[in-house]
Figure 1 (cartoon, rainbow, N blue to C red):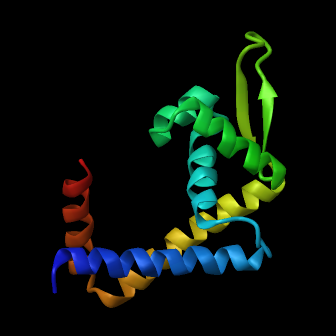
Figure 2 (cartoon, rainbow, N blue to C red):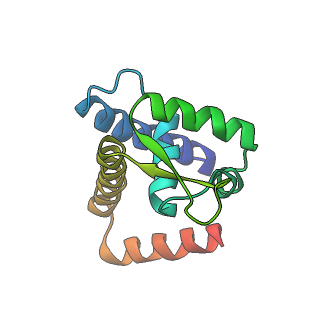
Figure 3 (cartoon, rainbow, N blue to C red):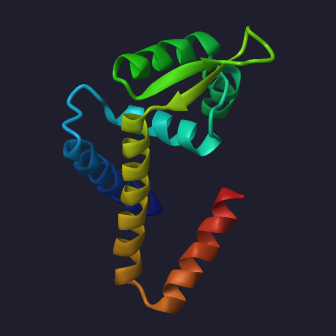
Length: 135
């Protein structure tokens, strides 16, 4: 089996974990891409529009459109900076935080699935090799 095939299988499996988590919240109007946005916002802890655009490698207008959709879904809100009124921070709402935590559960579930299929030594080797790939 080729590495590309393995990556595709793992990607689909991870996507299924995410979809399963979305279904728990009856999040019919939330697409899987929102998971990525919520995950990044949660990781960055109150990014500005510019910081989020840089992290996601998107334009500021694209980020504005995404954030507006997330606001309509009650997943994030924006808070104006006390020191610079031109700056807004993007923060997760309670619903957004629930989905962020679900995203973490999906990551953990996939990790458990992989760990169960490997010996401890194989698992350590896999982690080491993947670390080399992402550096």
